[in-house]
Amino acid sequence: MSLLEVKGLTAGYGSVPVVRDVGLSVERGELVALLGANGAGKTTTLLAISGLVRTYQGEIRLDGRPVGGLPPAHRARAGIQHVPEDRSLFPSLTVDETLGLAAGGRRSAEWVLEYFPALRGLGGRRVAALSGGEQQMLALARALCRDPSLLIVDEMSLGLAPLVVSAFFPVLRRVAAERGCGVVIVEQHVHLALRWVDRVHVMAGGRVVASGTTGEMRPRIDELTSAYLGEDPAPAPGVAGGSAAATVTDEGENDEGVRRP
Ligand SMILES: Nc1ncnc2c1ncn2[C@@H]1O[C@H](COP(=O)(O)OP(=O)(O)OP(=O)(O)O)[C@@H](O)[C@H]1O
Image 1: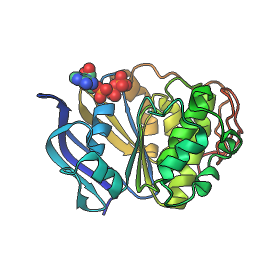
Image 2: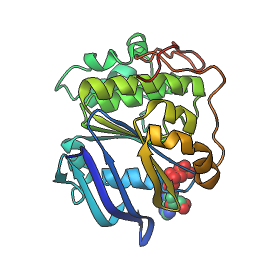
Image 3: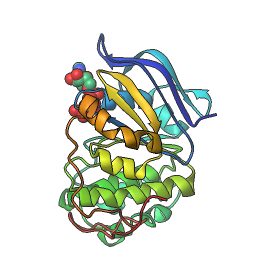
Image 4: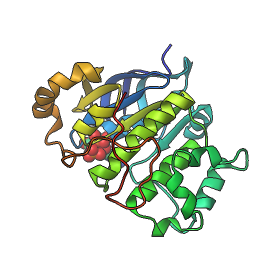
């Protein structure tokens, strides 16, 4: 049984469906990328999985349990954590306050900081004073504080340099492997995603038009790019990967050298 199974999902805004008959799955410990050009329906699909937009038809199962009828807060309790495109952090809170609120006093956020050690030195800093990379780290760390079984990350790279983004992938791989959670990422850097994820779903016009393992999709990258994906804002030359703990303290810095296993 897959961790997440989505079948025949039709969802949208008001009375207008914008994604139709979407099917996808995520296994435990797996990184899955949702790729597609602007407006393809990636964000809407993720929002529908989290219960944040209207679903007209279809099935969403988490660990075999139907969650499609549950309100967003119940889906979150069931194990779904969503890092939205805008990260939705509170600018006036400090890093410690943000993580403390997310942990809700139930458990320490200490284990989360092992994945993001750069946040340790920033505990008293307000979100508004963090760099874009640090804010993304905090948004990911906040989501992990709830120990999700499914982590959804929309546009992880938005506003960040490819070098910074490449530092997050090995961390997510480690999280998935060590915590056994599934991770779904919308990523605009197609080549970067293909270097790190296990499986890919390509969306166009509100539908999933291609799916496969990274190994299956890599040889099709040119075909998929010209048909559906548009231009890839390709990673900077020489970006090979990042360390398994995000140490980005400012845009443009990371540890390099760890490749996808
Ligand atoms: N709040 C909304 N109300 C109505 N239509 C919307 C709304 N948000 C998005 N849409 C429309 O839904 C379609 C899919 O948008 P969506 O944001 O899901 O695509 P996307 O693949 O995530 O694109 P991008 O990469 O640009 O974020 C687009 O045509 C978009 O204009």
